[in-house]
Amino acid sequence: MSLKYRSRFGRGCWQVQEAKARFSELFRKARTEGVQRVAHHGKEAVVVLSQEEFDRLCHRTARKEGLVEFMERSPWAGLKTDLHRTKDDFRSVDI
Image (cartoon, rainbow, N blue to C red):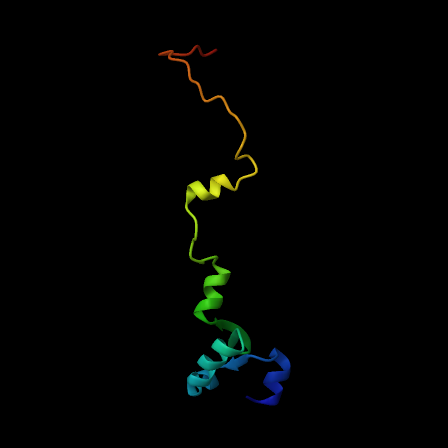
């Protein structure tokens, strides 16, 4: 990576040609050092990141609880509500 390019875009930023030529290193660094950026025509255009980082960013963690457990943890879990409905077949509407 050229020093001029590195100082302009910071650590973890690659030129497209360099990223293509050294893809294995780009891949390894994305897994071990974190997000790697690839620039095209002097502008950052693509981000390469590990699957774990992508999942974290997308909140794709394995759910360890179901809906019932989630609702039981709710601050309103013990709230008593009246869910009784009337048996009316119709309702009046003001027009």
